[in-house]
Length: 460
Image 1 (cartoon, helix red, strand yellow):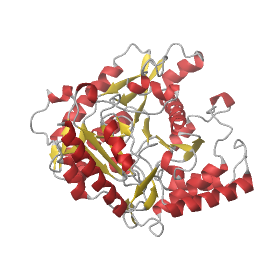
Image 2 (image 1 turned 90 degrees about the vertical axis):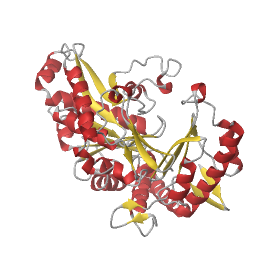
Image 3 (image 1 turned 30 degrees about the vertical axis):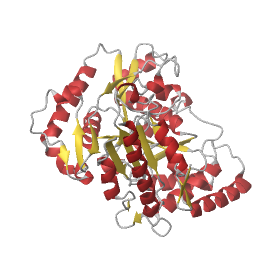
Image 4 (image 1 turned 180 degrees about the vertical axis):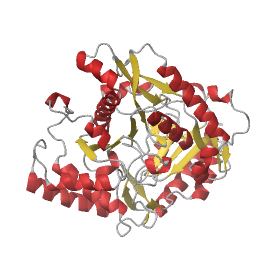
């Protein structure tokens, strides 16, 4: 996606210099390797990328990398890994599987969040709550093989206050001692919240849900927790309260429910850090990456796993292995692009936005203009975090939700300004690259502010 601002063109996923470097490296790799079947073979780009991933987004927990071709497929692989790990940790169930290879005596499901999105392949869709993406016209086979929790969200509303919105069930149980408002975004992510009254409320509700799931007849089991850490992307750019997600992960791990982080959207500094897991202060058993990994130039995905997950697939029989593969698994051009992109993003010499001592991106979206946008009458909430700036427009009835065309006229006006923006119903958003200059982001915000102000006047 090209965004033209003040005579400059900035690719949404990378800067011009990186694009030139990526094209050069991919040309060299195509000439050197062509296509190499990955089973039984290894070559430099794939090996180097695996090492970079394990020392970066997987540092401290992952020991293996499984390559695939896109984010949705990486989720499919993660689900297979998680279910096998669950069975391995529950020997009684594993004995039943060995005695009944067809598995018809057991139903493995996921625990996930409402509003989540994990891809458009059939298995990935089964792992997400009912949504416009899973309707009958989109996926006639969809049944939703899971329990889907309604999570609390956090947004900045007019005046710069960050507020927690509790789901309806929690609303009736809160004691009025819970702190639901914060003066800054950073306060939302502080570990000191772990000892709060709100943490107690979250824990109580999560334990209730997990208890209900364990009170079954033995046929149905939760074999995995899958979440988009911190921000749900296609579900409406919602910031899920990190305190809630952290408690959910901790409680699932205590019950030996494998945890999957779907970081296809959030990974590689999308939210200002290399991995969104850093913001939750907890680690998964399995994690999925794609999108920004290759700088936006070619498809590639990776599913990272812990050593304990890997061990669940070891054995004398080949049938115990993870029998999932593609002709283009770990294709050399994708791996070369990913190596170049990740190195480029994390090096303060090539990425001027990188604060080297903290491994954080500097603030890209001008806080004052973001505040002004949040105060506009036509704006309901704003989320500015890392490379993402999302704005939900005030809308009711059919004007709200993913199917809404409410923002169409506004999006068309943005195009006149050289800004090509994708709406999610009445939610519009900007995504720059980790290398995009804050000056360009400022110009974008100024144009967005002016257009939304004009849009609000017309809608009155």
